[in-house]
Length: 432
Picture 1: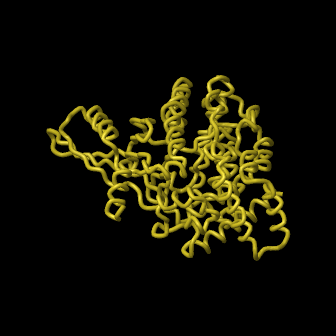
Picture 2: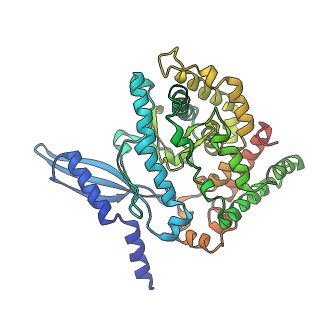
Picture 3: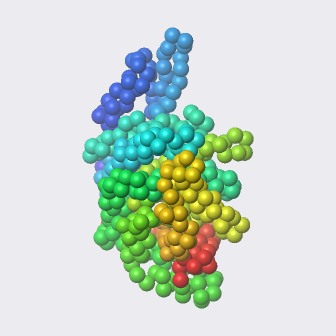
């Protein structure tokens, strides 16, 4: 096949099918109550900002009696390249996101409405979903375009300020509080979600994936070359078991009862949007629910703090950030403040929160091993995902350098940040 044919085939795989475009047309007709509109599809993300989906901004031009009006919708579709779908778990991820938008988020919205919560106390920090399809090769989600409300993604190469971090912590606390309250007041309501298997654990028996994750362990250990033997020995001992065995013990929510909750699951910069007023954070939204999981609330907290903050930030504010999270969680569960109406000190007492941090905090390292290469990688260095998938398919991805996710452009920053995560996890007693 010549280069032109390959390019044309890729474009066809990356463009919405006729079935998806028909669904879009029908949605626009319903939403705008008129056929007097035109639209065009524009790329909505830069290279390296989305590894699972292909995202378009549907730019709509409405012809009204008052003139032309503009609007947008986000179209997020699954790639149709078969190798990429297999290697990046595309279909399981889109099925999980559809579950979030079709069942989980509506359930917690109804619970809050029935409790009569004031709007200011409701968890609503997610994009409105207009439509999902889980048909094979036609997986798609249509979402509101949050940029129209002046939300923006924080530049992952800039440092978050305390106000950003505190806002994220309060948002996750509200989300997790809902699971605690629903389990307390409607014990059967979360049964279906307790049974969902983590996306990574669904693929724990894939040989090439195991080889790649074992390579992540070796790369992490290499970041301690300049450290004392104490740190290397502690990490080496922690890594003695296979990656997925460690991961399962730290992430499987059914092992954490009664303290497991529904977690967002993918807590890094590109999945967070903030609305600002001058330099102040007004509110935020969580994007990409494709890794929704039933787990300890610690998994969301550790994922975010250790992949999205620096060691200097953690030295100055780690305890404060944890306090922000726990205090918001307690306040939101509480009946005393006319919120969700349960007893927070029964459902998740402070001593159990501290215990969970000690017992599950090591998950911070595992998420950092997976995500820090992506966070530190500049857009121009992001490898071609189809080529990456082909290499994974034939077993040629044994470490980060093979994948292209670790290169000259991000090696120094990745190594420093990974080293800092390891040192903090050991010093905090999470790895011992």
